[in-house]
Length: 264
Image (cartoon, rainbow, N blue to C red; front, side):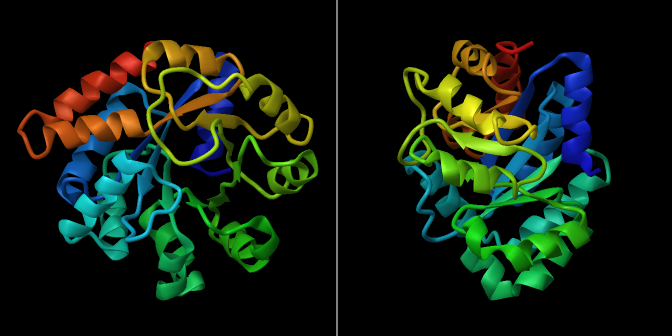
């Protein structure tokens, strides 16, 4: 059982809902990513998703696209992200997932990337554009490395494919509550309850719901139908606003604590 599975088991025992944060690694630089990770751990974030900067992030809306570009402009590389995870691991056990596009794994070499990620202290990979039908070698490598392959389910995923996807995932299932790309929204999708019910009919793996959650009230509403909520763009937007200012980490920490208050 790795850190993701342990964390969700503990949350279940305590009757609590989980809080997952996404940020772009290297935005505004990798030192900031390190200190933000420690702040997230301190304030009660359960899983940290680090987006590995990529030049063509097809699943991301404008806020996260710009974060990826800032990461690239800062010189962030996949190797640099793994080095930062290694540094985080010296003082923090926060479960870490890399949110990554397959080209990055392919360029480094799939087996090498999986091995290096596990050695750095990564707990799971969410490969945005790797469908489970094409991931048998990947899944066996992940199992050998003790990491969780995390898959997405969308509102448009038909029930038979939901069954296929969720039986292949580990750690948690990421339910994308809206069609399209990432981004803050004014309201919560009305189909969350129906789709999480379909997922639960096929697996007992925890469900984390994301895409669009941007305030404590929305987090609380989503948590009624999920084991965890995921917030990305709203936090990334705070990082963009503060840039490299000295109070970046404290500001983002306080903003995140307010969001977490919606579920605890």
